[in-house]
Length: 395
Ligand SMILES: C[S@@+](CC[C@H](N)C(=O)[O-])C[C@H]1O[C@@H](n2cnc3c(N)ncnc32)[C@H](O)[C@@H]1O
Ligand code: SF4
View 1 (cartoon, rainbow, N blue to C red):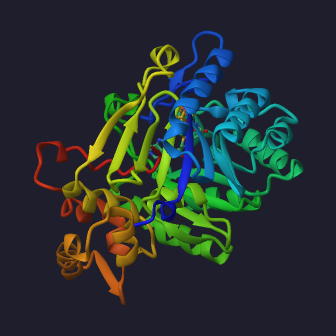
View 2 (cartoon, rainbow, N blue to C red):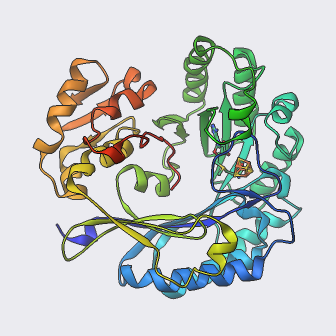
């Protein structure tokens, strides 16, 4: 398998937020002191310089600056990170460069400066347009600030933007969920991510559980929301992702099609396929930001993915896509033959969780909704297998 066939992306993690949201289990921390912007960017530069050696000569198709809240960093800092990426990596002419932004951190004119720094896509954490819902979620911004941020995006020419929304919120009903969609569409995004609120271990909500709509009420919210999005031209292409034609997120698609990525920043993960052996290595950086600052020039922790783990690892990503995957893609990305995955897929087919169309396997509507039930079938019988079913797509 020629290595050039595995597309390569870059993920950059920014671990601080104005305030930690009570539902969030991302590697993010309330910023208590002054932002150590200069030191963090220098640490990212050292991290990138070191890790870029692993991918010398390979083209990078996308960069995703996620968090945390990358928009806490100044446009100058973001420009420095992107300059380092240009210095150490070979970027595709049409490289997609996404920045995650919290509407509560956007000053006037800020997006134009991010664009000048090289950002060409923004993901805005709207969550809801209902002030009471935002308060229940501990968000730092009002619906009005989200509207203003979207207006700034259009004014800056950054029309390729995503709005993150959550549903199944405390106190939310179906009309409320639909109102959120309506208000999101009015802002003319190119992409909508629509996540069901999940209660994650270790979060404030796991300790003091908010009162949520029932499972049935939450399940009933989805079809009308999807119909409304489809009518507005947003096709679902992944469990939680909807896009206008040509506006799918290339970066996330690379994760979901089991591509490679470098991961730099506190707690960032990477995945690289070796040219020589075809083995797949996962890398990880220390999570705690202060410790990352003093260790980013040292090699990341590396773990070789065993062939027995690959069907699960691949399925966990590719079965999130509504169009699923071809057996050819499975073989090109894992180096394994169809026999490594087809028996499990056939079991899931009889349970109505996946279906096939020629050599392409895809999740059914029920399969997409109960993806974890499907993925359990791919887990190898190892002690480490337990606890792997975290369906987040962000590395
Ligand atoms: C890393 S955050 C992105 C941006 C930025 N930090 C913000 O919140 O505005 C990514 C997205 O994940 C979603 N998310 C985080 N925790 C979640 C949870 N427990 N359940 C569902 N969605 C969640 C939110 O929609 C959030 O915008
Ligand atoms: S949801 Fe976003 S703003 Fe809230 S804590 Fe998580 S990363 Fe930070």
